[in-house]
Image 1: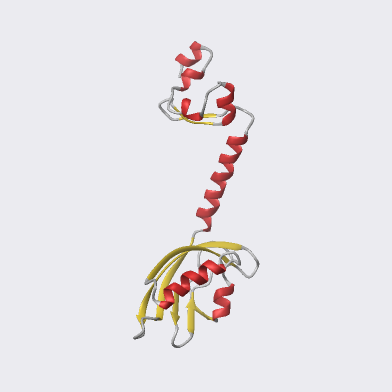
Image 2: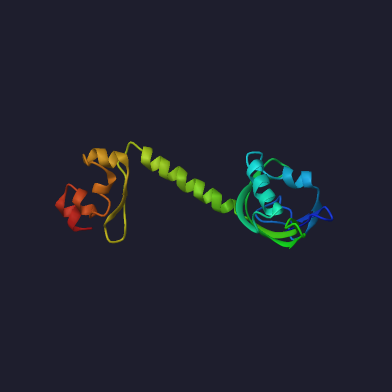
Length: 173
């Protein structure tokens, strides 16, 4: 949770749980510098631009992902949504509220999938993955080269049995 009262100069946030995923079940007041300092250095310019658009009235809500830094230097991914709940006569935000969710596990999973995909694609061994009906859903570059295909598209969707050299093995699939 976060709540920014621009007029009073008060920022309330739920801090990240330093011992695991998620946020602590409490709210603390932080300074603007502490709030900005919590963002990963590479994300600060984008976070500042998004927050400024939010505050000056050119955006009434936002839905963004940012990296946050914990005091021990570890990084957490967060998905933040928020909206302006009060504006002054000029249309500038005077109070905003929002929710942040720790999405670090999702980002770790996505990175693991990317790593696996790079490993499969760069493998010197021919790799083919099929679905339960026996049709190929993925082949790597080594498979394409082994079978002298023009591209992976020539194999994806085909029966795995097509690529077996022993007809008896193919019949057993």
